[in-house]
Image 1 (cartoon, protein in one colour):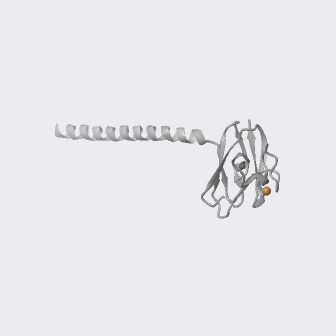
Image 2 (cartoon, rainbow, N blue to C red):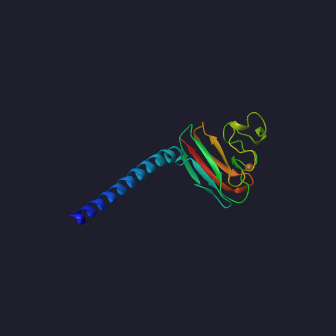
Image 3 (cartoon, rainbow, N blue to C red):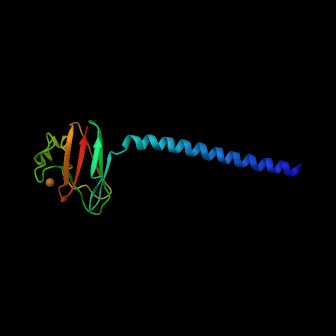
Length: 143
Ligand SMILES: [Cu+2]
């Protein structure tokens, strides 16, 4: 009788643990998914050898965040180097003016660990490069 009680207790404890783990995991992954869904595919990682992903497809109005995971400064900018005028309205000459936040370029090196974001309101296939390392390139397709 006492043994049965102990087994029952053990089963009860295990059940409580399993339920807690399930609830925790379910709740966690659920809220985690909401966060990752809203930023899914919207992040471009810059490191010292490449931008990744090299080709990103987004919808008009989406915001892309360029994160510097490298050791050096990185400066994402619209094609073509060095004027950056391919993306509509963009021009390196507009850096340090009131229009700076409307152009597809960071206008300065983004420090390691920091990021820069831009919202794409123009449909098209937009090439960009790193103004400090022009051989580093990528494309953003805005549908
Ligand atoms: Cu450039």
